[in-house]
Amino acid sequence: MDDSQPKQTVDQAELDQLRAQARLLSQAKDRQRALYQHTPAMLHCCGFLGRLVNISDRWLERLGYQRHEVLGRAESDFFTEESQRRYEQARRGGLKNGGPLNDLPLTMVCKDGALVQVLLSAVADEPLPGETEGWLAVMHDITRQVEAEKALAVSEVRFKELVESIREVFWVRDPQSGRLEYISPAAEEIFGLSLQDMYDHPLSVLELVLPADRPALERALADHRVRGTDTEVEFRFQHPRGPVRWIRERAVCVRGPEGRAVRVLGVSEDATERKQAQMAQAKSQEKFSLVFKNSPVLMAITSLEDGVLLDTNDFFTELTGYTRGEVLGRTPTEVGLWTDGHRRKEALRLIKEQGSLRDFEIQYTTKSGEARYALWSAQPFELEGRRCLISAIRDISRHRITEAALRQANAALELAQRAARLGYWSLDPQSKEVYWSAAMFEIMGQDPARGVPSYERHQEFIHPEDWTRFETLLWRSAETGGPFDQVIRVTLPGDATRHIHCWALCRPARPGGPQLLFGLVQDITESVEA
Image (cartoon, rainbow, N blue to C red):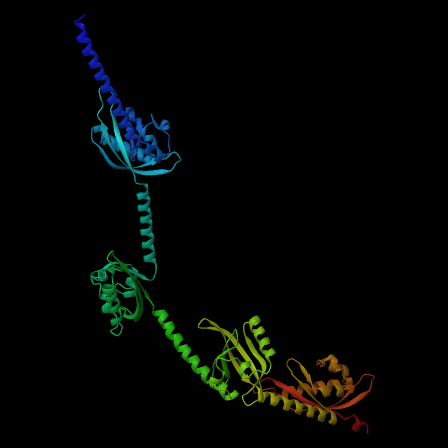
């Protein structure tokens, strides 16, 4: 018994030591497992037949699975078909031959069907006795990087399509060396030089700028280089295969960390048509100003909103007596030109409804107090962002006086015709359109309310025995141009008869115009029956 006691003590100590080592090994494995599972990297281990035996929490979190949904499944179940083929081919050539896999691009499928782009690296795990071979894999999530690269590629394609399709030239230049880093294909059309020539000789464009405009472009280049300021310049350029062109160039400087311009982005465009249009507009404005100033018609420009006079021509002063200094900045009402403010309101209403005004009769008062008459025409337009009205006012005072005199003369003539029992008529032989003076209705016994009788209706009141001869002589006069002279009988309502003496001559209504018959009639009943 005494000999066995030390041996039992030694066995117990060894056993305790083995137990302690086992506990330490278990604790180490637990720490290793915890470290493995909680690492921020996407890790997994594969064992027999490529089955997943361990997965990191980050792996599960990124793909959206629970651990029990993954363990025991084939590693390739989580790859797309294309990635499965690529991975299997790479694994046969690498892991199965003892070598590692490095940064193999693959696409994994999340639980919700989303795709994750990864770079997979793997190394074979040396099996312990009794264990099957396996491998350890780590994956780097590059989804955002791949998406960014795709977006960048799409952006580059769109940028290329844009700069190669627009008429403007897009270019990038080093401000210090002047070297072109990029210039779009449109440059060949605008500048008439090959892209290679412009890359090889960046100043080739400057050499073709007209000498008078070259300093402006040189100053812009200096501003980029020295001060890093944005510029906009226009210059004339002698196209190698055509006429001189106007070029408009805008440039923006990109500054580095030190605030110095490291790159210049610019756009050049052919501004020839625009410059020609501007010059044509300037000439047109000059012509308009000349016509406006020297027009023999009173002209004025006013604000459409409040009617303030903005400009007048020389004839305005001549006709109204007011100088430009006396009226500009004031309304016609304030000046005293308008005698009826309601007419202006009516005119503005018509302009608003119809878009313009044509021959609107107005009355105005000159500086001397004389009341005059005019026809007002006006057209709205925009001047320097302001809605305005340009007016042409034609004085008709003399015409109104002439009209009044003519009305008086016509009235006197009408009285004379009535006293002499004379009437005036005309006939268009082609259309048979008839005109009668007022006295004709009384002489011929017709009702003015029915209007001038047509040629055919004349047969109703001209005596039947006289009608045939009347018509024959009348048309003979129209054909030959000879005079017409005949006495006819006219039957009045109630069967009374009048004797009418008719005269006519065939004359053109205007020089070179159609022939018309102009005639007179006189009631000679009293002399015939006496």
